[in-house]
Image 1 (cartoon, rainbow, N blue to C red):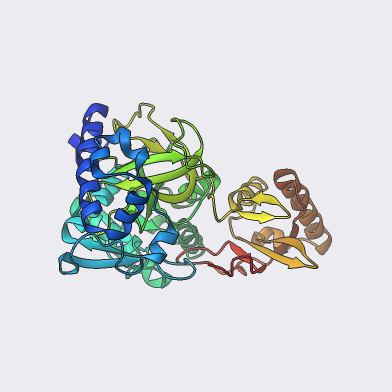
Image 2 (cartoon, rainbow, N blue to C red; image 1 turned 90 degrees about the vertical axis):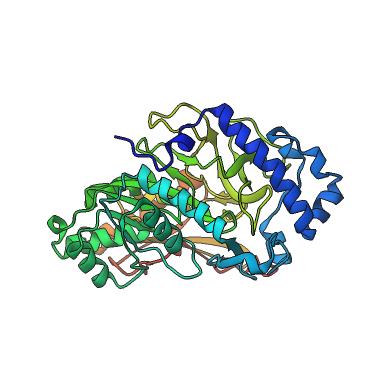
Length: 436
C-alpha cells in the first residue's frame, strides 16, 4: 500500500499544481527583485521586470543562476531576507574554490523537512519505523534533511552520522532499524560488513534511501539482494535545499519532483533554450517557496529527462530520471567525453564490484586513462596469468564502450578506500581546472 505524507499535495491535479506554481512564481520574482540586488541587476541587464512574469509560461524570460554566481555573491549577496530571520546555514561538500553557503529561515527548514518526509513515506516509513540516518551531519545537508523528515513522519530517528561501522551495526541490530539512509557506496560497504560478521538474520531493514552520489541499477540490485530491502533513490542539492528535491516511489522508475516548491526545466546546455518534455538536457530549478535563499533558474549541470507519464503510485508530480552524467564533471580524455557511469556499467556487467577509481593523467601532452578495479576474493586467488587475461578483457570492453584505450589494473580486494561519505571515483591529475 502506498503511503503519502501530504496526499492532497502529492496527488493533486496537474491544473492545481500549475496554479500553485504560477501564483508562487509571481510572488517569488517580486520578492527576489526587491530584496536581492545581485539578481535584480541580472534581470535589469536582460530587460525583465517582475511585471513581465505573469505565470509559469513566462519563466523562460528570467536569467539563469550558476555556481559561479554563487561564488561571486558569496557569502551574503543572494540573501533575500534579513540575517536576523535566518536560523541555519548548510554548505556544499567538495566544490573547488569558495564553498556554497545556503541560508534558511525556520519556514524554509519546515518545508525542506516536509519534502524529506514525503520521500521517507514513499519508501514505506511510518511512525512505527526506526530510521537510521548515516549521512553526514553538520554542514552537509544529507543528515539534517532526513533527520528532520524522519521527525515529521514520527519515526524513531537514530542520528548516527557517517562512519564508525561497528557502532552503526550495533544500533542497527539492537534497536531494530527498519529504514536506512546513507550514500549508496556506504550502503554497499555496510552490506559487506553485515555478511562478513554473519549478522544478516539479525537486521530488520525493509527499505533504504540512498543518494548524494551517482549509482547504477546494477548497484541497486546488488544492495537490495544483499540487505533484503527495497532501495530508493533521492535527489537534491544544497543550493535548492538539500535532499528531497525529488524522490523515488514504489515504482522505482525515476524521482518525483516536489513541484509545489520547485519548478523544473530541461535546457540545452549550450544555448540555454528550454527543451520540450522527454528531451535530454540540463536540469534547471526555480524555488518558489524559499524565503532566505531563493534560486531562480539555477543550472544544476545534471543531465536528465523529465516525464509526466501517469505513475502507478498515484503521485502526479513530474518525474526526473536518474541523472545521466553532468554537463561539467564529465571527463574529456583525448577529446572524448567520458562519464564515470559508463565505466561503472562495464565493470558491473563483467561481474566486478562497484569499487573502482578512474585516474586521468597527462604524459608528453597525451592523456592517459587508468581504471583501478577491485577484484572479488575469488578472483584474487587466481593465477597471475588469469588476472592478466581478465585485465585484457576489461580493456577491450572499455574500448568498446568509450572508444578509447584505458589501462586497467586489477587490485586486491578492499584496497580502494571505501568512502563513508562520498566515494571519490575520479582522480584527475592533469591540472586542467586551475582557474576555478
